[in-house]
Image (cartoon, rainbow, N blue to C red; front, side, top):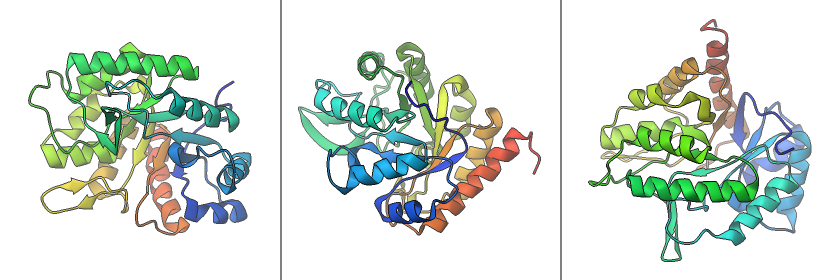
Amino acid sequence: MFGSNKISGTGIGLRTPHIQQILTEQPDIPWLEILADNHLCTGGITPAHLHAIRERYPVTMHCVSMSLGATDPIDWDYMAQIKRVANTYDISWISDHICFTSAGNRHAHDLLPLPYTEEALTNLIERTKQVQDYLGRRILLENATNYIEFNHSTLTEIEFISELAKQADCDLLFDVNNVYVNQQNHGIDAVNIINQLPLERIKEIHLAGFDDRGDYLLDAHNNKVADPVWQLYQQLQQRKPGIPTQIEWDNDLPDLATLMGEAAKAQKIMNQAVNGGEK
């Protein structure tokens, strides 16, 4: 059975500087999420660490290179590596992004935005189905931050996401920071998107901090979660209490105590939603 360990509560992203401390102190963390592309090697200290972590904690896997929105052929060598890691460590679930990362067989190493069109949607749905068939499980796809918008989009973001989940029969990972960054950069209504989400498909939430560049916000994962993002998170938890949540922090990494403090804030909001608003 895939993902035999139940994921619940608020987890954190597993990052290399914190691994030894986690293994030594074994803090009370409900689950951990790895960046898949950092764990594809078959030898050395990285898989040894992951084996040790996996013995103590449930683990999910977050990918950045499936490039499901691309028109390049699917990279089946990459998918084979993902499948191997997922099966070896009994990964609870696998996620990636609603985006593309390659064009003309050249990788951008960035999450590039898709136009919200029927053509792009059909392509994404078909490729998602192929990957799910290969992996033998549903995957989660995450809403991405976009720094440009396409004039020829014919669907709204929420229409695009909802149809993707329905027609591809995939689950969703909803990043609250991403929708807030897009709101500030493009003027979309984040609350409206949250209110229209297909809740039955939301399996995980991401929370992160942004970098305020003055004219725009950058989804840098290098700060504590901002107050407006906490407010949006509270609204989403109230709509569907108890959605497992993960704190993402990838740059300017803090100490483990700071990271766990952010997770504790999310857990408190989650608990209040589960208990009907009681403190």
